[in-house]
Length: 560
Image (cartoon, rainbow, N blue to C red):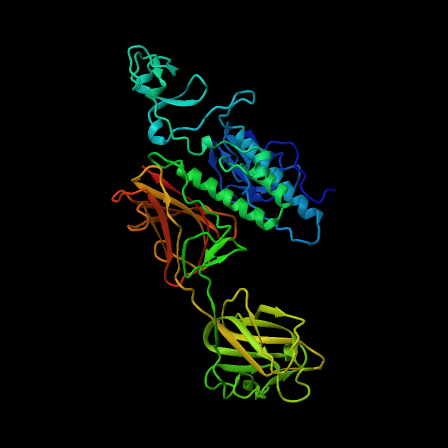
């Protein structure tokens, strides 16, 4: 028996007709979960677990939909597999190769392709044998109250209903008794000049071939997801990080292009596009460029001052020191003025921890320690492995783990950074091993608080527009808020068409998420009609010590 779903050559949809009595209807295609199946009765989407239940998820042969109430006689019942297309599996470098994981991922991708193929088959499209033609629709304002027509080359046009009369013939020539301005001479022969056409924009870029995608030398053609995947496989041998970054950028560009298609007015090219594969912003105040993640951020720093006061007792001057062995002098580990004071213990977690509780919650982003300095057992008892933890109210969350540590002397101080700090009131170190002594000791332990990030400003050098004085500027940015932020308050975007002399604050709108890592595509729109110029730039500023990551400027569009 197969240990994974078998995806057969079957369409991911099926229609049934109700008879007024039947409540159970089958579907012959596999689904991965009940939520993957959409159910419609006469075009109205039904609610899972309210009007019907699903059985058979995970089965190759499909399953069954059972309605609580039988659909009416003659009702059209549609069962449709609709997957949320997202990457759900991450294959680790040098990790265990598990066939089931690979098969499950390929099953999902095959099902997703079937879904796309099904949706594509329900669209208006060219025959395979047809020559290439432009089928891009004009914008809504242009095609309103018009009929869809085609010129002599098979390209899409629209014609006003008031002008079309009988069946009209679209002629590329100027009709009789008409001028080149486009006035039609008769009601049945219309000049191509009578029609408004959208600017070429993305459609005229062309689509790269596989060879062009792999070569990577042509920057005038668009890349389909398939060509992107082929280029990645050929050039980078499937490197996971590069694949994710390229896929995210491609998705963001596609989402931005789709959103831009609804803009009223003439839409030109994308300006100042930058996926930050290098440190390219000319102005970045209080911002750090992360070359690994290809983003700019105002990362929170870590203080170099110990957050724990110099202790004179277990609870003085503030906070509370506790230890697993009830050592009344454990507080001396936090008295940096006397290096011979120490805490020592032996045994397991139950009898081998040292903790400090602050009077209020703090975000500790780093810590440091050194061995005790008492006798000949100092180095043999120096800790070699431990965990640093925070108390969540019911248990210890491990924040940092160390092993194989070696101290060269009993005066050596080692410090460490916590990768994912969080807020706790009580912190503890659990020592699990020493260099050679049955017990272990710590002469000094310090903790360092995370500092609030600085507000930052990001702005590139200006680009020169081919046409001056746009009415609006719309920018698309991929942003990952690390903290909870309010767009327009904690992060403000401005546009300029005079090189930054006059900046107009824009309005943010979220277009959609990019994957599941917190990145999202945001639109920034600013009315620049009160100004003039052709030197286009933007400025993004954070406020209130909120940390964000700017991953991508998909591009700015000037609207006229």
